[in-house]
Length: 173
Image (cartoon, rainbow, N blue to C red; front, top):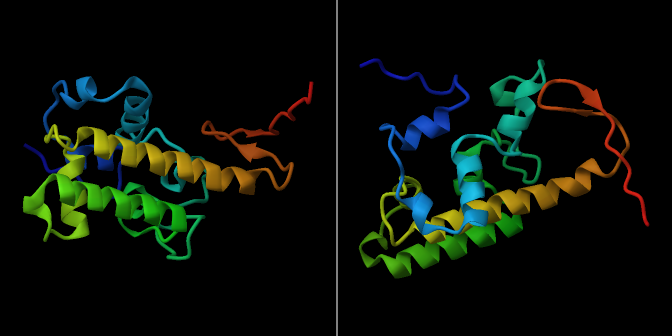
């Protein structure tokens, strides 16, 4: 069995928490509208900088920084789960961690990283919905925070395919 190199592939995050290819029980335990966000998160099919800036040729992985906080870290999944200092994301994170600690008393003294790792494996039915809603909230908050930035100018946007396109203007009918 070959070791999978980290920090190189698109699906690094996927490999971190899923080593066996099988149907996951959490897919049955969370509502569809929440499950959609979790699936996008786990497959790196989201709007975070690590993914969106992948298609800009000049952007190396270490240059894909978080745009909504001042930590100066790569804007990947782990950054938003653990370190992002954006006020809204930090609030959602602390509520999530408090909820998990209340639900599972045995992990009260775990570090933040250990609790997140435990929940992201999605093996504990008690944490499925809480974890899924946490992920959904991060993606929604990030999108809301960055929509204001992208609406400031009418300059062309780079699509995932690498094309420059101008966003259509909304008609007030």
